[in-house]
Length: 512
Image 1: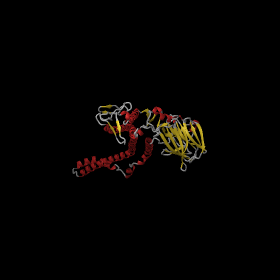
Image 2: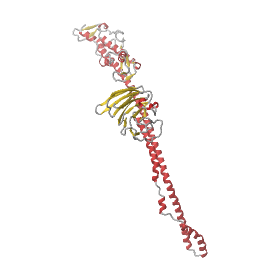
Image 3: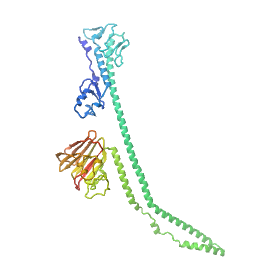
Image 4: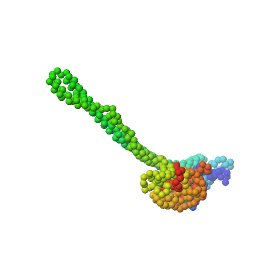
């Protein structure tokens, strides 16, 4: 074969299209292509080989986890694109094959190729990927015309065929890109819907809680005004009554004075005597009526301070209720928000105002009786429960040996030995005592190495991986893994803490 024939039959470089159609694992064209939930495509055999013996499966590119072969979806469109690519690639190779051309003359200098006039360009349908020649031209598998009319010259056909085949390859590549873009668009729309829905729910919950604060404020305002009115009302009524009395006395005095002045001008003795007999008793009575004195005005003043005790009770209730609503709002904005539950705290444990710090008190606190309260051990649970997602907290522990972890609140006793965290079959916790760490999983102990634990621990809880992990946080050595529980949690869990000795400096603070 001459150099020109070799050049004509040489397969062109696949370029970017071939890369798009190549499996990232085996580096060959896709064979039985399947799509992962994340959108990446691989050969079925490649994924099966990589996943053998593994409990967890993840995408080799983006590391997104998927549940195994049941999540694989065959990409029929990719199969079609691969077949189209193979057919198109074959057509380019077969364009210069002498067996498919009736007559070709090749010059000795290998610089040009001519074809006899009226010679038609023929390609076998099977070897050319299903392309047949028609009077109007040759069309490819995707319906694009790739041949010239039967009356054109061979040179013109040769010059047009290769660009058209290249264009057909580009169309195939565009089709692949379009499929990928449509897939990305679908996923982005799904994410948009998820984000919009989640944000809408968050806004609705936040608005509801803020509405509760507004209602509380309005109710508080009404009640305060009622208390003030109760204090001011009697004084105002007394003052008003005195005003009425003074007004009536003034009116009577003025009337009597006018009658007396008029009587002084009377010249008829009989009339004067008769009128004086009726006027004189009124004057005597009015002169005997006392006028209000300064002491009376002082007594009528209101002592508004008497309203303060009742107002303070209302203030306490308002702060307590607003605090609950604010914590609920924080829980909405931060699903990992944690506070200690006053209703579960042992009477010797004192909670800070923000409910994030617990300290020891030798004197029992006057907590109200509650069935959720621990009575045998210095223990307390979190107010919040957790049943999904990933969470991370840091706790600062000092002054006392401790136990900390998670538990099923409803299954944990509140008194006696069964109420101890380390004894419960419904808890997963870590104990530090005498510089020895011990892990307790549903009452089964796992001694760990003797170690020095810093004041700060990090606790991570993942419902996706079913893991509860503890890390030591040291300003010197940084973050160090301590222990991980593999717990298949089937119910909501509460964070749980136990203070193992009543030391005055014992305390724990949680950060979320």
